[in-house]
Amino acid sequence: MSDPFLNTHPSLTAPATGGFAVTPSDVAALSTVCRALYVGGGGHLAVRMLSGETLTLPDVPSGSLLPLRVSHVLATGTAATGLVALY
Image (tube, rainbow, N blue to C red):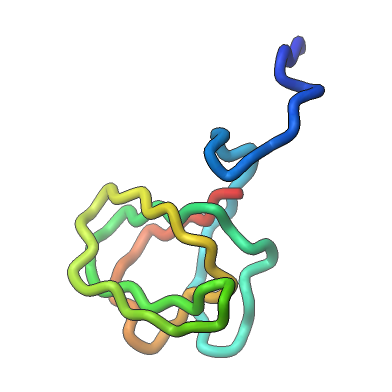
């Protein structure tokens, strides 16, 4: 398959090139720091940002795409479901 963007440098404003389903955990880090989180089912979302800060985002709507660089999605405080990390 042809990729006309093969030799361009990826940036944080470029589209994601990979992703994986997220299982929230208070201990385990994501396998890759993400550039965005997709929230399939709305609810509170507790994350540890790349900077180390822990935040809880209340009442995130279903279908949200959040441009967050996070290392962890925490089980405690997260009610949102259908989470996908994009990188």
